[in-house]
Image (cartoon, rainbow, N blue to C red; front, side, top):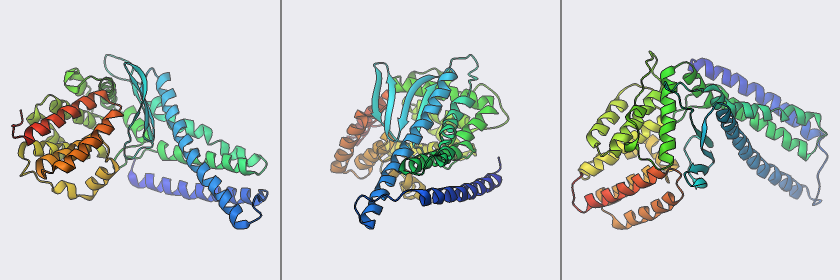
Length: 379
């Protein structure tokens, strides 16, 4: 879908909904009975305002939970297996020991439901229901908007009205295909996957990789064919490009740094539709590798770029970011005190991190950094 047309539709839709929302909200407020608990207009206003603010935050959180539950339901109906369910930074994840609560957040997302696909020989998995289940769940709850208008005006009907509007907003934000700078939305994913068998295969393999690593299997131990797309398609897609990202990470996990660095370089220099979050992470991993091999000559100008700084700030507790900062402190700045602070923070993050294999890999990386700082060459 052309960006100009999509922006035009989005703008017209936003203006139209804003007009209808404002009209209905004004009519509802005008008909509401006056609430006076303090016999003081200012105190009454602050009381009502605080209820609406707290209610708005709680309703937005509930709308996100319902959205992710829609993905979960759509995945289960399509034969997918549960991996994890995240709202904000709280993650319910399935390990071999059972379901456990962990912490993780990803820039550009309010939540995420990850599920492993049903096994098939050609990896052609169902994609529509699992991707559109979230927006459709919000559309269902958006029906509270017209329902609230049929009720007697009150604080309760006002909250129902706002909850319906929030669900409609989340539906519109996720159903129309938009490829964001960092991550794409549900509508884009459904559209791209539905028209491309290579994308469906790449998605299935990525989810199998995520499931295995979540439960403790290292990338280096996983089947090689999980990191390659067999299906042919004249249309390149972000999912196939992302699988190349995972292949680079697998090579790095195998300690084949030169091959991994080459894959990263080729991917970054290509015009393939790699998601923004993976492109940024690849650049940071390359910088990390350069620190390991030539710490004193490593080009750190990447860290001055605005996009990179925004990512580092938003993902300050992501293991890759903390590991990179630890390498900078130990190998470039040679600041033991700063390195110790970063190490303590990283230990706290790893204690609640949801992906077992990444926890083990980070600890290996920390030992490697310490060995290089002590004068030992990179293996």
